[in-house]
Length: 428
Ligand code: P5A
Image 1 (tube, rainbow, N blue to C red):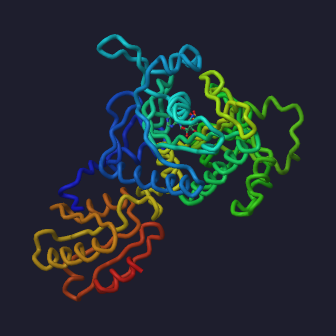
Image 2: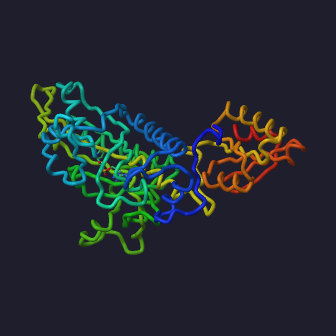
Image 3: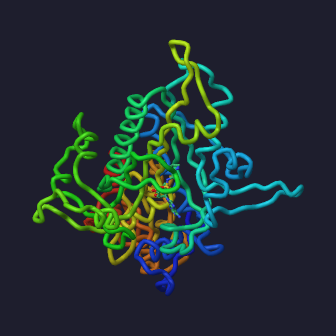
């Protein structure tokens, strides 16, 4: 992609109303723009990152045996009356009416809808267990939307739903998602702490939140330092992590005798990037979903639901990956892998070398070519701000001696290479 064609409205100044670094950098790097309180447009670079995060989340869901589908954002109030949640949900739910006055809502979550869809087609124990997921926009009319997309009103969530025949099956599905979450956050290069959690309006009594550690996190968490030594790839990782003490401050305060010795109890701030629940028959019972069992009886399937804040993850990733000059994207989620800078746009030799590099690099990886008629200083600042992993810099001096400069955004390491060697290094 050429900078002259795409839309990257970089801001020189720090936006006054952005309190935390990820919000500031998302605005400054031209990833998002607010369109109404807590509602954001995703500009080209932001959308590419959102898609890459979704890809990582999706891959780990599929690996865990969950199948992707897509449910609508708009739901009918009647569906929510069946579970009794229409009234219970309160003012966080955006309630709307269609032209004939039918009550609708913009979904804050999809337990009712998936249950309705799945129960219509499922009569027998042979159809279970199953876990289905989608990655879809949600709306919650938060009292205090803040920190940009971190606590938005409209936000992107991965939500998965499991259906099982018995408690043991439900526990297995829960653990499969638990493990998928550990893998997802690790694949994104984030350190996430699973914390035992109250289940709130979703329901049930088995629930964990996953917190990415960050000083700007909204939650304070207390946990046993031993938790940090657990290898998430070990077969007993889920078991050990669920058994190890970790609580949000509010819950921790309710614990009469904390079992963790004071010298091992850590207090950190965290960003809640995931939350999983097992609530058994809460929805299948209220909505009348039963299946036949092997021995001729009937049961209500047991459910769990599993959320990842996909858009919030972008904020968490920036909190964990930035420096004074801007964002420093990890490879997996960078909007482009390479930023190509032409220091003398309009100079025939520089243009020719850039065109050649652009074509050859694009064949192997993703490239953003800054082909604007701008000063070198401005181009450097922009490229550092948007944080692509590699910069390839073409200037008149280098062109004469047949070299380009390459810079690693994370380490700051610079090297002079022939165009061929630069391409080889980036694509190796
Ligand atoms: C689980 C999946 C649920 O809604 N139902 C379906 C369950 N859980 S949750 O904890 O309420 O939300 C799941 C994750 O979504 C993110 N999230 C948000 N992200 C941005 N802005 C918001 N206002 C917001 N609210 C929730 C969080 O990451 C949360 O863990």
